Length: 618
Figure: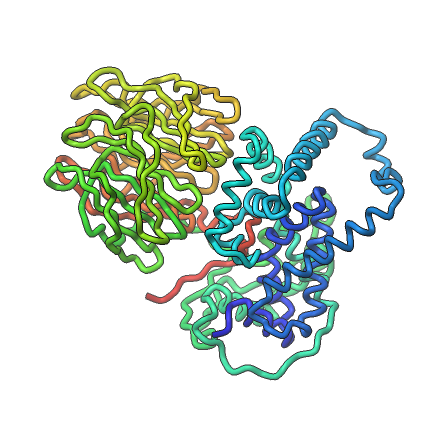
């Protein structure tokens, strides 16, 4: 069966030049990352990336097997990088001072000096590695790609990529990985890059091929639907030059009944103003530049609403959930009889269905899970007999199997874990009746070793942690493990790079055992209880934290008030799963759509969600 890429290539060759945008957006981050791993210069890498896609479009007719487009693209990238390196080596002045803008030469700054120094350090670190390690690191940190995507692009096995990525991390110091991640985050290609290339290819003619019948089920709904939209002239905005659009405004709603053989419901598109020459004026009469991220298709925002979804197969509270490849795994907890369980169930949000998976080896509750390289690490917890486990058990969804990791130095329950830059941080909890712990311990999955880190400012159990911009936020919990003890509203920020904690603005509502997750850069805090036992104090409230402004905002309440739920994010939506409500253990699952969904996404090799959104008929 022909792949999605194969059908897009076919559409391009047969006159739909706009369809090439799908391939650009899908692979631009990967091409850019590979180019950087060879050239060690962001601007050169962007220039090469542009040239790669232009050349690929010009030579599309030379591609014998459309389905192998990604392999062909990788080959073009390698060849152009080799040509560039050869030409650069022949130039006498490697710095090319005469090519720089006079303004740059005349105004040296401390910031530019620091940037150059950081880039040189990263260059030296990467250059010390074998080429394949440089590539997987660049694809992961700069391209923002998962190991399974890296495997596809490099033509390697998923396991091989995972091994090389772990090995590459071990060869670099942690500080260098943090620096690399921060630097790469600010250098990723913008959405306007795609539009710029599409505008260029409009002037390139390629010979069409013979007609193909229909589109089979193999073509994804998103690709097929967008391709259909791209063919709906005259409603496509025409780009006269970069940043300038002319043509009729888009319809606010277009109905498409079928794409090939694929049933489709509705594309919703917000109105875009007609930016013709007599309308493109700002307040002072100057030309008004459109937002390139949203100029093509801007979705109608939804949000701040909850929807009921299919219940879990097993009702339980104080469980933990994690996401791997778009599936949510609900693990452990305690059941309706108040007994710890080892049950694992997989939820598919796309199908709204649950499936039983292999049990966790140790029955436990009030533990924590984190994901690293496609595996789920279940850490700590307690049971009816053991107050604080130190065990680490590792689940691989790809094989549905569990393995054992090295024990945590400090056994505890009611802890929270977060994964940052290849390490997992186990934070807080308790292991006896008395004060809760401020303990922080760092786990290295590659070395299978633990290291003591700086304590939290406030010891507590029943907290929840989430990550924004490489920093961990420890939220809520209880300071003492005694009956009736009231919850905390405390929020503290941990920086793994400096091993330091900082006090941040308190939540508006104190909570024990809430669940937190991050959507669009904000931390959402969901449910929980006001005291340790929760009776009569169970919360349905939701609030969001903006780390940039250190401010809290109230959001729509859950449909079902509950303590100790577990929340996970898939596709920009939050799924609140399980928990308890006044001595009743729940199997309830509710889906939250944040305000403004769907959001613009960063350049990670995927089509920006601001190009449109779709619903599939159920």
